[in-house]
Image (cartoon, rainbow, N blue to C red; front, top):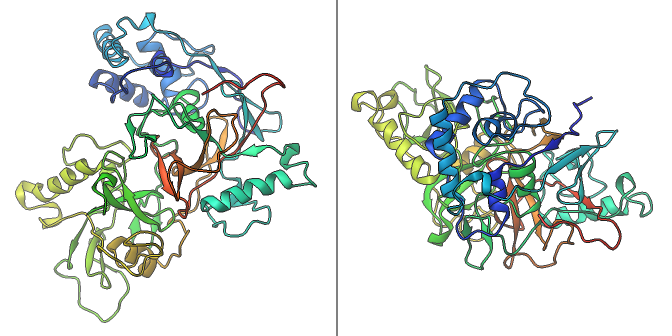
Length: 489
């Protein structure tokens, strides 16, 4: 049985600041704050960990803001100098709309996550909803709905049908005796978000106004671009450390505002992501290393060191470590500890690979690069180079032709990770519907034609996605008392 999660979770003052109307989004944390977070991590505190070991609520907040949790930390806090803590507080104050002394900022409403006796649901008093504790129930329970992948992901229409099937269960009594389960909502206006899309939709990091954003940033105390789930350490054929997430290419999207083409090793979907998002990188170069023998065999070929893998179909050589940046930054700043990075940093990291070893390049190569895609790929299931089955791209060829996966497959098995009181949390994108508040019903129309909202537990990014993509599903039911409106996130 999992540890009960019934303690009051105090939101930090900086979260309070973004919970009220602000004129500018918060920026990334300063170097002093990041240094304190690193010290907390090194002391054994974990993002979204159990009570007493939470990085933000049990370590960072007590040191920087003097906010002590109801239960003392289960391990000693790191020794942080007064000047460093003061520098962090000052930077947070300046980022919080020039509020000055953080003690004068309004304190956010306390958020309580209360686990049911059977560990099946989690009551969220901040949002006045009750979450299903299993963050990937669809992987093992389809309720008779077709087109759900083995990993539990599905397209948006299937997600709507799956929730409807939950509510129709047991002659209309519904799953666990509730027939008002729904997808989490995101409001059409959210001043906590960093960015605004072409249709006025708020997106980016810090979007705590949505239900999943509230859960990620406030209740669980996570911070972008951290993943809610630890890195996957695995072996996939000759590769290692593949992450079930999005990977950058170097090819620009058709619309420059959409950033660059990306490929999902969680589902095999090829799309585009804005350059400020944090994705993973699998570097390659064209051709093969010297010493790799020529052969008529079309399968993957590993060099004698085991560090590179040649794909004779795409005629490119891949780095065998599919998350090399998590262990080797080549001195490039801006790489997240899980190995993810924005697109500009990805270009700098590959450049640093080529300039390493005194200019000889990593493994003696100076032509490492990000993979590219075709400008038009008829093998894709959607127009242009978008959708499933895109074997015209280097990553698509690797996923479908060499690893032998199919649309909707994940390169690694689904996560069974516990995050706070939730389990089976996936470090990927989850479907979200449009709604004024957490307790509001889902609107029929999304943020744009053919698009719906999504939220990433891989890095805290809120965006929109084509309804034909395959994402995961978390659900809750509303439980505001009759005649009393539910609290807005």
